[in-house]
Image (cartoon, rainbow, N blue to C red; front, side):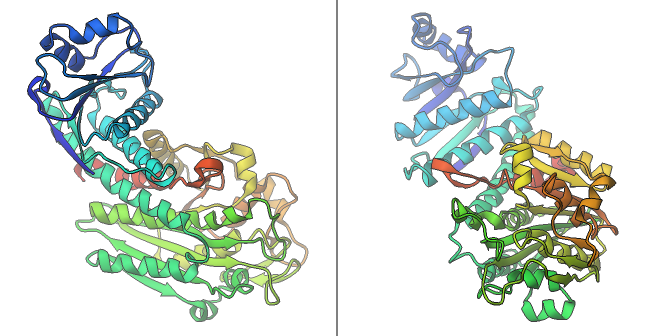
Length: 498
């Protein structure tokens, strides 16, 4: 699939299909109106006869339009002109792609820039359209097992002053989608294939593909022992698949921001719960407990594709939590890499035990910003459902920057508190603290646990337990929050230049 930015004379363009819009009031967009005039009112006549009402997603495919060279024109309903937003464009593009693919159309021109929902900012409009198109293609291929017939999509930019912004948007969109798709595919793999070793080998391949700016170091079980990462190791000691931690160091050219940004991804390639075993129902979905690591992997691909002028370190904390004769137990006391001790009350609260050692390990890089991404708690799903990722942080500026990226991409996050009052819930009378609280505010007490290891840098924790994958008929990884993290990095990079 190829995408192009161009300016067309729609009336004389030889293509399989031109897509234009019509609003709920039967008002044509300027592109549709231009085609209508050239066809001597052919389009408006059909609209006036009630063949399309302009509601969002309603469509009408026209053939052999008088005086028009294009083989077809697709009229797509755009809803209320005065109440048009991101949701509207998503639905319009989804319906458009579904219709085009049914007809085996290969080449199409989208002339929909008049629908711009973002104050004439063509950059965001193109980003939104391509993002929706790519997600729809992935859905068609993955869930419906149907072929994609489209070979090329061209975007008609009416005002040539917007060409540069549109080209940048196209470049960014394709790089983000490459990372997003890589994260989805990695997350969707079965756990007998995607184990900690596989995760580390995938990381090492990045250094071969992007050898000019990515270097990968793999930390194995023996090195972890030497480092004192006993909490991390305890989680994996019941599994035959030994833990591996991949440290992906990315360095772009012409660095504009000398801050070291660390992204840490929880990589539990399967989480049975260990001795505190999970219920059997839906346990198969615990292959998605490595979606945080997959998101970091995908985000690093985006950064390398765009050669972002940043220093980024991605850590994929690969591990597997299984029951067995050598598994760690409720009641164990673990010494973390930081020297702090943890009383294990529940072996299914394992992600924080892995992350706490990684949060200490990355201090050697003197990071300015650290973001961990983890399918950490079912409690976050109870609190926020499947629409918003939970956000916790010890720095207001970092919160502001992440919330800005969230608003720009519509990859929703919601901040939850880290009040000192919650810390007493993880008190232990035999260790520095326990690995679970009292059963209430579980997402918060988990974040409080992690915060004990983040005093030396600005830190944010993204709990993606409710947003990382979908269940049911469309079961699979969402790739979140790759788009959010990508935009966060683009903003730091001054994205209008890259």
